[in-house]
Length: 386
Image (tube, rainbow, N blue to C red):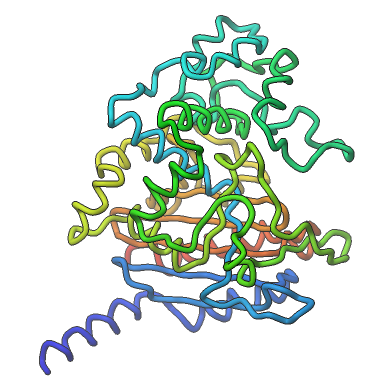
């Protein structure tokens, strides 16, 4: 009985560090203000859930509520999984991060590099968005007539002669979805598996992410897949449901429910009791290597920061520095979904959030809400008590 009471007391003390009622009000009021149809948030402390909330609908027409089983699209958060796969191959001796990309993907030799030989562009630069390649995978991303995403590698290869390196590789940060597609190709060619199969066998299943998958939903999970929405000029519109990310699956193809993403956060944060299990996926030292800041990220709409805070790109992640804290994470936005993960491995704290509505107006803006939520959690959860 004494042990049980002690455990309950510890749970209350840990939970008390997070103002749960204030967070719930802040989060739910923000969702209402910004017109978010559905969202889910989880906050973790030492591998325990200290806050969990699901709000709104995964399908506005049928009024199906968001719940524990709701599958969200994670967009560019997928890049962190791709980075882990590359590090697995590195640790197995199959590649070096300083190898030229063209060594494994010779098709990129057709691209025009005015700054030097294409062989100077490395895997590490692709992982840190400093390779010099354009941001969109498809050259005409903003044209109305193009497909949502190219579905075949051959389509990208056909565009290589019309692809130019835009700056001196390694000289600065510039986000590139295209570069991460090349990483997906490397994973396939060195492993001999399709990208999705490799990720399932080597990352998702070992972490127990049994309801996570890439691209379109399998039939038995389709009822849990969230719809997505867009708000612009005050008008709400539903976007394409259950879409195929095509060849861009390595930079934005993951779909997963929050409970599976909690398993991923626990892996990133680490747990001494599960060290051997987690090391079988990727050694702790390799994860920590991925989190070393490499280049500064300018403040922008994509990376907003309040005064005194700043961001850096690492190897497939980003670091947000604020209040003497270093939070490691990644954001994603695609087809109406906006997602974010953040972890503090030192304090073993983390959170994960997904919104199924991209509001684009000044008064209703999902990115603004997401920034406000991050800063609230920095001030009220991550900041060490003085």
